[in-house]
Figure 1 (cartoon, rainbow, N blue to C red):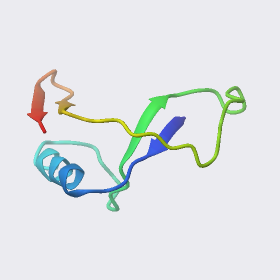
Figure 2: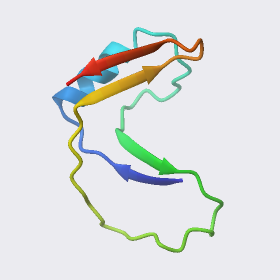
Figure 3: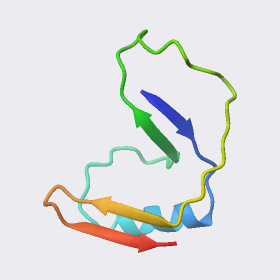
Figure 4: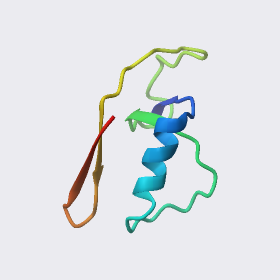
Length: 75
């Protein structure tokens, strides 16, 4: 998996709180925000860099349920 860890903040914590009221299969009790970019086969992604950081503005969040329903939250 190619992912970036994300700093926890009030906005992300509020999104998590709102999404927790919907049925989900989350088995993780400790909230560790991250952004998954891709799933790759182990050893097949030689471009991994430690300590890489970037800033990405987020203005809208979409929660998609298994039933196809979507919840949009403007930030």
